[in-house]
Length: 138
Image (tube, rainbow, N blue to C red; front, side):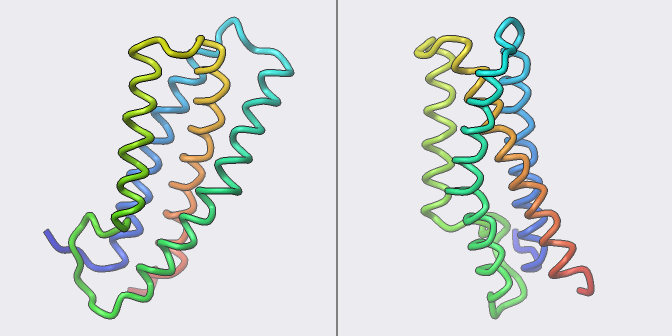
């Protein structure tokens, strides 16, 4: 199924918002009994690392890539390139394995997932912002 190129940013926004919300929900729900200043600081560190080192750059890169497409219609999964899909599959697989095989304590899940989920959700918001900013006139 092909969509207009500006729709790819909206699809990216929805994918990252849903993923971010789900991971954030797991983290926040697991946080019961572990809320303290140190854990909150660690969640902020995880958020900052993922946001500034990965997701903010990823949003910029893919927004620019989509804006520069010459053709108007594209396959709906083209909101990411192959490398980004491979990274996403790895992260999902690793995250599911950690939880289902109990490879990490709940405090780690709480702290890490809250930071990661927040960064993912913010990426979704930024993709949505870029959709409206760059393509609102189309």
